[in-house]
Length: 64
Image 1 (cartoon, rainbow, N blue to C red):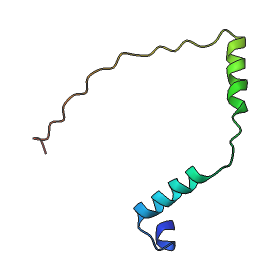
Image 2: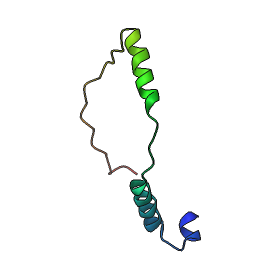
Image 3: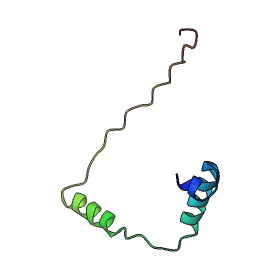
Image 4: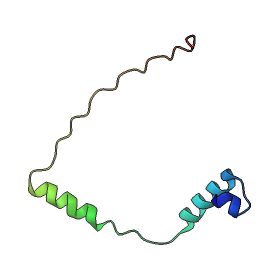
């Protein structure tokens, strides 16, 4: 709806949105990340189990 309102294709509108976001000089407050990390460190951190990747299975396109 935004693209139509601006007289552009959806692709052109998406490109405009992305370019506008990249050109924006606004800063984002990321201090909450540091606070979250400090809270995790206070309790010994977090160990995440990362499972091994499994090969993808091929799609069977012969069945309807």
